Amino acid sequence: MTQQTDQFKKVISHAKEYGFVFPSSEIYDGLSAVYDYAQNGAALKNNIREYWWKAMVQLNENIVGIDSAIFMHPTTWKASGHVDAFNDPLIDNKTSKKRYRADVLIEDYVAKIEAKIEKEIQKASKRFGSSFDETQFRETNPRVLANQEKVEAILKRLGQSLEKEDLTDVKALIEELEISCPESGSREWTDVKQFNLMFGTKLGASADTAMDLYLRPETAQGIFVNFLNVQKTGRMKLPFGIAQTGKAFRNEIVARQFIFRMREFEQMEMQFFIPPGTQEAWYNQWKENRMKWHFALGMGEEKYRFHDHEKLAHYADAASDIEFRFPFGFKELEGIHSRTDFDLSSHEKFTGKKLQYFDPERNENYVPYVVETSIGLDRMFLAVFSNALTEETLEGGATRTLLKFPFALAPNKAAVLPLVKKDGLPELARTIVEDLKWNFQVVYDEKDAVGRRYRRQDALGTPYCITVDHQSLEDQTVTLRERDSMKQERIPIADLKATIQDQVSIASLLRKL
Ligand code: GAP
Image (cartoon, rainbow, N blue to C red; front, side, top):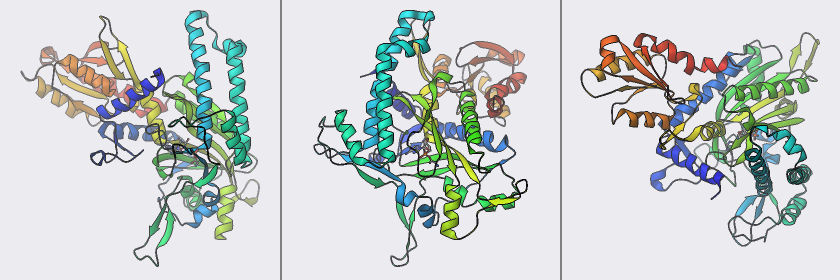
């Protein structure tokens, strides 16, 4: 088993064991690629969502938030291009009868070459120690250069063939690279065919009158169809943005890698409406803003990179992904897309209604252009969770497993632990919980020896443990233990709120933006 798959297995089992993510309907043996967020997972997810929402809506006077319905008029999806162009290129293996996304097979092949490059770099870094210069190594090592060239050539060809919808060439590429079926090892492939990703459903009771609907494959269209409503009722002036978070559904053929690619997932999207001609500047600005939002979490700047698209979606004139280093390699976490006036113009055509803005400075009406930022909440959850899971060897050789969440995202901010279950310590501990619970999520835990309780809280990612002992009864002080350093300090109970609040609030993250 490679180190990567080993780490990923640990992520999945820790998520289940500690109440973060459960397979859905598990008592019925689960449903493929569908997951439920458990007590701690829901809290972590809410905190990520809150960080995103506040960074968008609270910090920007010109961005407002909405919550549109999942069901939309079916013509919406004709106008948006999803009925005709929201397809995946699929290929079947004749031996195993398994179906794959052709582009994913090729991307996985590329990921293996990238893993070789990373391995080469790690080896060299170990060999040269502190004098190692990664950039220089990447630019000069012949093996790294050759592999990098290979990666670029494959991705370029894939991008071009998808762009031209040349599915014969996608198949030819799979054959030339000698990609075999991960299940059977066979290289007997069918032709590549397109497959629409939207889930259909029906609205209405009787079969004759029921209306065919789709579950929305992106939240963005709920924003576009409300553009004029929001602009008028909010008296918004360009440039301005509309943000929303909510469920989206895609009938992904290859739903896998835990919560990375699911059929039901949540998006956090923001459409920024701008005057035509300003899209390049705003696109670059939003790329920068979004990367800053990620960096503020302190998860390591080297774990992110931009990947500019060769193949553009039907609505875009520029697009870039923010990729994150997941346990299975660098993969898309967020997309920033310059969507032109495609969506609003198309809704104008299909509805016959004007979706325009009168610009008092230009003294003209026009259909605004849009730059969109779109991030999957579940994918962000996986990035935060997998990055946080750490195993440490302590002095004396014992190990501890901890979730090093950014403090503000941790499900619980503090655990209050009476040293023993008697002598009035639980009562004092309860009064501390009662006092702190108005400001942040706090838990009470009195079961087991205090060392074991510390380990339990470490494994849940709780930033602080507050231990109440006999001295606390005398001088109203407690021990405050910090998760990562395990440092303990004695502080007055009266100072707890201010000391912890400052470190764990979403505001502490927002201030870094
Ligand atoms: N409105 C633009 C849009 O939907 P996208 O690149 O298809 O663009 C945006 O999706 C983000 O949504 C992705 O970067 C990813 O984080 C998330 N996402 C897309 N499909 C997903 C899936 N099947 N499961 C989980 N997250 C997904």
